[in-house]
Image 1: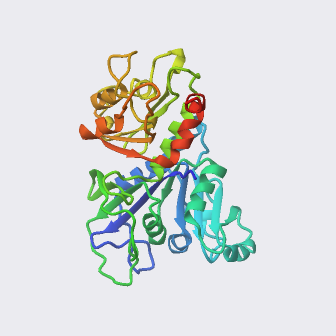
Image 2: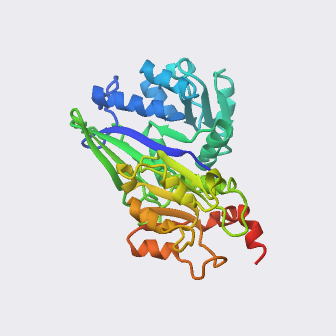
Image 3: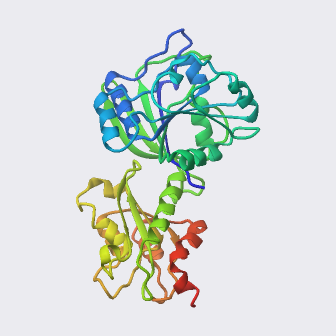
Length: 378
């Protein structure tokens, strides 16, 4: 299954509350941070909120800056991101602004909830996920049916909790406001339960007027060599890029993608790209990025075959090019067989030099597909 990159976005008080219990919404972000959120909205394919947030806040969930909407259209995207909501029960008000502003909408619910929703006449696609909400199925449908590669989840706490509990979140953007709520009845960001993320990795801290933005990457089970839905998405893409390689009897077909810590694709490449018979995938991708780009230090190289450590056609193998670029994390699908190089060990070479290497063996067969003429002959 292929999922979108899932970005959780929230603002909380110093004591961890999303709101107070008053009749009006508690504004936690500063004006400059609201503009930052608008910029993030403009960059994604879909924005999701829960039905409870619609009932409590009655949001429009739009990109407010007209120039950002114009830029989306110029890039071939809809004026507004797809608006998504989730309800298990179908308890929705058809008169809220969510349904009457912006572009297309999708509602995910259960079989029971769908019966209730059918009577509301909502201008939205309704998808029943089964007797219960199936979060992986929801993400798969968003990607496959609507082409969603980046999903922004703005709340509420139930949605954030589910994505983190199930290891489906790729990034948490948390804004902390300098105030206390102090009301035990007020809603909190996260609910109780077992979380799969473990200790999160800090990506950035930033002062924005009187609030502080903290960006974290959740870690999946398995410690430092963490994997996520984003890892699976980008590695699958690298494997698919390998199919674009001109076939060769003397070299593997490999695809590679370089991705910044915030999920931005920096470059992609594949073996024998642009008719060059000796160029390798990682080499082709890295050559498209300025060496001084500061994002390389926290980027990840996704490659369908582990980076090479020996090659006759170039002075520097791909493992060395990765080290020279300053990249400290590699995700690969397939350990290099000894078809052309005996005892190849790009993974071990990189790990000994301090690079975190993750091998997702479930993608090995996909990486082998464009190389069947080599592997089947052995």
